[in-house]
Amino acid sequence: MIFFQIYKILYICSLTIYQIFINQKSIIIKKCLLIISGILFLGAGLQAQITLGAGDFPHAGLSVNYMVADDSTGALTSLITIGNPGANGVYNVSGISSHINDTMVISYLQPSATPFPLFQGSADLGMFWKAFTIFGDTSVWQWSYFNSDATGLTLTGVGVIMDTSYFSTLVHGPLQYFTPTLSKPLNIMSSNFALGYTYHDSTKSHILLTIYPQLVIASKVIIDLEIDGWGTLTTPIGTYNVLRVKQTRTQAEAFIQSADTNTNFDYVDFTYTYQYIYYAKGIGTPVAEVNMDASFTNVNKVKYANVLPMNLNDRAINTELVLYPNPVVDFITLQYPQLQGAVQTEIINSYGQVIRSVEKNHTKVDVSDLAPGMYLLRVKTPERVMTQKFTKI
Image 1 (cartoon, one colour):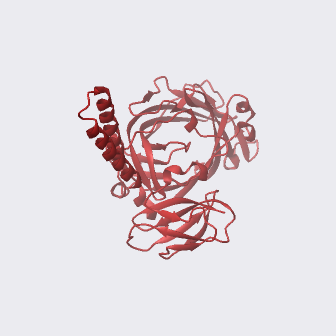
Image 2 (cartoon, rainbow, N blue to C red):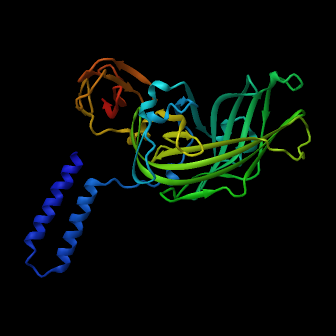
Image 3 (cartoon, one colour):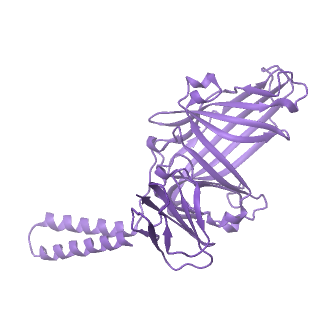
């Protein structure tokens, strides 16, 4: 609202100046003033599309916690707003808070800090996924490896640690290290991400994983993506300016009880993933991902970043929440619109941890005992979330 008022004042002033010169013969001045007025007027009402570049890629030290709502019945569909393709889209996944049934953590680190020497000299970024399971109760820990340059971010390798104690025929111990072979890099992000960008993995990427000597796992992956929209995305922790990526991923699996890696695999286990992925500038990892059915109509899974790193969280700021004084020494006052329902106020530190939570509608909060530094203050109701930064001195 403040920025709109500023634009409005400038717009009126520029028109006034134009009236002063209206009787002058300087056509150039008139045209320039009209252009300025038009730009200011449009800027007050329109939101510009963001573009992502190399500076928006993930980096070592970034770690993000995701909240996951997984429901194959389609019940999530009515709780979110997918929006339409094109410009000025409105996307909203804030309604899934009560349906969260899982969490996951994605951490980026230097390849030298990972257990796979093969990639420590050939990749410049590693990513660790939390443990997951296959074959019933078999635990798996996965590292992905990337290279980034001026053109984009590509997946160049995968490392897996598997608890093989569940395979009675394996004799190499309960914990095995495997380095799958990736036949070609997969394009993950591009330095010219903008509306209209497309990527088609026409040659496919093949992954071959040999669990010597009994089991061979072969995969082939095909990715098609396009940036089909931009606009604002609201999650349970804030609102972001985003690009929306529409992605289809096809992965075929073959499991062969053989040590012969030259086997002609019969790919019978096909997995299709249809997603909308939302990227915000300066965050380095998706703000949210929405898994759909093949028609991109029904939602079966939603994942959103629960708390983003403090120095990357500018896009989560809501201008309707005003904090003062800021910086603050002892008490900080909250000013925000009239809210319906129970109000919860949270203070979050620079590590993304909620260090204080108040279950009442407070307009003044005591922060005198906080250590000096930067914090987030988040106001939550069942209907909305507002977030703002403050500095404790």
